[in-house]
Amino acid sequence: MSLEQLRGKLFYQGLLLGAVALLTSAALALASHVTEADIKAAEAADLKQSLTQVLPGTYDNDLLNDTVTLPGKDGDVLVYRARHEGRVEAVVYRMVGHGYAGALVCVMGVSREGRILGVRVIKHAETPGLGDKIDPAKSDWIHSFEGKWLGEPVAEKWAVKKDGGVFDQFAGATITPRGVVKAVKQGLEFFEQNRAVLLDESVAQGGKP
Amino acid sequence: MSGNYGRIARDGLWDNNIVFAQILGMCPTMAVTSSATNGLGMGLATTAVLLASNAIISAVRDLISPDVRIPVYIVLIATLVTLVDVSLNAWAHDLYKVLGLYIALIVANCAVLGRAEAFAAKVGVGEAAMDGLMMGLGFTFALTLIGGIREVLGAGTLFANAHLLLGPAFAFLETTVIPDYKGYLLMILPPGGFMVLGFLLAGRRVLESRRAARAEVVVATEATAG
Image 1 (cartoon, chains in turn purple, yellow):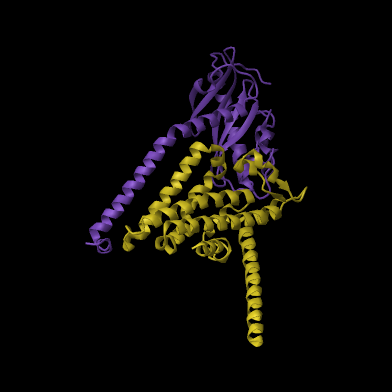
Image 2: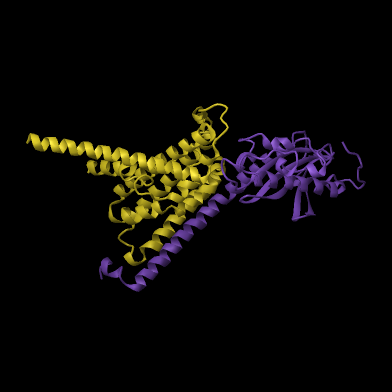
């Protein structure tokens, strides 16, 4: 039987589809296996980089392995602790906000006094050219959080200007900055609630900056 | 044979350009052309997929039953796109951070399936690969052009963030066309894409009809002279 006739047969078509599915799945499995380690390494490097971006001070411990997990408002929060000579100088953790197009994953660094050292949005799907101004490569907006704490501005001013707060919104995109501001505020509240555990101290420190 | 390849190149780049003539692949065209850099990146990724899918489909064209060809093409194309996706993620992570969102969109580009069905399945591997390359470059040209126009009108810059895509050596491409420009948001938003594409299509029509009219005049004078 020639290939021409064979191609018309049902069993050949079934076999063909099966073979194609098998081959492509094998290719994907192989690619996934080959790239897995590199992707993990790239993501770990990314994570480390995003952590150090929001940690301007000096620390001498292995950040990625000094962690504590605490229950937060939306599930568990994994906190990385930066120590200098054993004392926790700052903590870094993720907060998830809700943007215009899904989750806004923010990383924020908070000093032991409760001031924000830095914030970065590490994962988002906001409109290019509008909402993506939360990216420091595109706008300075994200730096406006630095040095702020829960007393400055006061709680009701932790919002975008449109909502009566102190933070700028972007032309054409209010939902994105609103989501980030809300996530950062929640992050600071999380810090206040868990200060003693986060700083690895049994006695809570009452000092405010 | 070289004439044939020339024809394929001409078709892909201009005469039968995916965006300007076939009006295919509108989903990624509208989605990513908010800047020239995005358009260029998407165009190059699509070119890679088109080249590979055309070559593979042409190579196995005799084995594929016509009755089940579409699912076979789709699975092949989706696999290629996923391979591009994971390889970029693993070995060109910085580039992936810029393009990652858009790579998966290539599956939704019916131009890839269109070339497989209309061209690659009927010709040899060399011609199919050439067609994939030229169609891809034509697509890249169209996306970069639309992206560039929208970026200049919408944000006053051209090729902003090109170093993220092409490496620091290409930072010189980044220019501010209009300094202190407040931005014209509509151009960055989806309607801007439709408007720019509309004007470009109209412009192409004018160009083509002028050329056709000139050709007619030449034929007419030749006829009277003869």
